Amino acid sequence: MPPSSSAPEGDLRPSLDQYLAAAGDVVFRVEPAGRLRFASERARRLLKLDLDAGPVMLTTLAADADQAALRNALAEAIALPAGNGETVLVEARLRGPDADIWFELRISALHHRGACELLVVGRDISQQHNNEARLRHLATHDALTGLPNRLLLSDRLRVVIAAARRAERGFAVATIGLDGFKKVNDGAGHPTGDAVLKMAAARLRKTLRDSDTLARTGGDEFVAVLPGTGSEAQIKLVAGRLLATLQAPFEIDRHTIYLGASVGISIFPEHAEDEVRLVALADTAMSRAKETGKGRSVIYSARAGGAPEHDISLEASMFQAVREGEFLLYYQPIVDAGTRQIQGFEALMRWKHPTLGMVPPVRFIPIAENNGLINLLGAWALKAACVQLKHFEEVARRPLYMSVNISPRQFRNDKFLDVLDEAIAFSGIAGDQLILEITEGTLMVDPVHAETILTRMAEREARIAIDDFGTGYSSLAYLKRFPISVLKVDRAFVKDLPDAPKDAAICNAVLDLAKHLGLSVVAEGVETEQQLDYLEQRGCRFIQGYLTGKPMQANVAMAALKEDLYTALLPTHHRPTIQ
Image 1: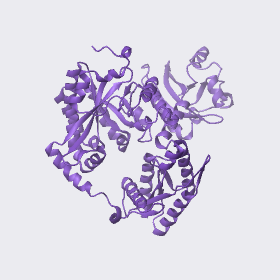
Image 2: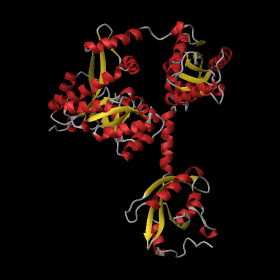
Image 3: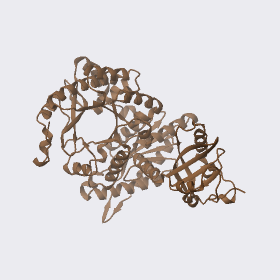
Image 4: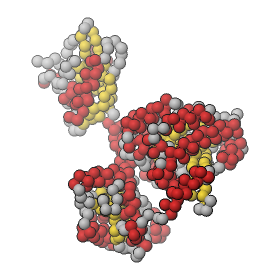
């Protein structure tokens, strides 16, 4: 007959169990073999335990998927040297009568007169896991319609591509754009427009099969991934259904709205074999459908709508631009939300073409990323920005920092750390004055490589920022795994503040997450005083956007520092005293 949980037993005094019961949400004393000797009153109540009914193994209390991890943690704790005070941490779900409960279990080995016993103290972390699940959903789904966003679409597409390759079968990708949607927002207002989008999403989802993926990728654009739909007859049938479901009127409040749609289609592997190109070509075909009458579907044709010819000449011009020194850096201030004082700058690459003028980064950065030129341009930008920081500090007469974007190809280059070392050594700045901005997607392409590189970057005291936080990879695990210092809230979550409840909820969640993880937050795209006030009141210390400074040339930035320009935006009694 096993001993009662309250009966005196073993080398530990019974009164000690009463103290142990207050140590955590659940507390257990466990034999080395894993059998429970004691369970706190709260543990017995939460898990409906009856130790008088027979022997109970701790691992059997865990969910099936977590039993191996718990078993390994117990073995690891037993193997710890006696008397060193170390503990083993493991997260596991324990079976409750109604639902599994997440606990963080801290396991210690207690040695007394040659005998060993394990003390397991658990903390309920169910709310934390629920919050992480909610943030993961927000990161991968469109806030308005609840459909997958562009990020999750890419993940699903990669899975479908892999399956199609194994089965040697084609499939189609369809981009659906509402025709005349702008008139709804302009004429009936954005709430009505949002209602139309939600209704359109529901209709499209109902039209498609469960095996299909429907995502919202833009204001009035949706993308459908259609596994197994590869023949022309199948494509025409599905496209016809998609068009028909959106031709019916939308009844919103007192409005009856007629829209229709245009559909563009690309086919794997006929048109492309990667997810980015498939969506891009479907989008090109959709644009062609709109240009040629709307309310119709068009299958991509290289002859009818290929890539713009100027991209080829633009790529050739880029190599000439490097030789001629046409690339330059602009600097956008990052300011303290409370004092408006400049704390640092983000270095932004620009291309001043002799005939095209200023070429936007969205045109030349993807080309440089594809042809490898980004490694040369990125190394130059990093060194030049570090040198410029020294000049900025001489004018400001106080410490500043510089934030520099690192492209995916740069990050994966085996010479990147050498470039980083050269930039720090050549400029003479301290490593912690440099913030390296990396997107979430870049980190998750190869997490093992990313962890190695980020750790070595942190050894140089360089700080790492996650750029466009919330729009990238769906996992939050990297915040715990990687040495991250800064989160940059994407402008997409800032532009409609404070009047957009869902954007506000996302910003609040990010700020709360950063606070508990000890991370700094920079809000991008701040353009109004209302946005700044909202973010400052919720603890966002650093602001970047047109309200406090557009990207500017170095000489303009130095003038702003010399005159302490942005503090002029504050009332006189709030202006800081500059040492």
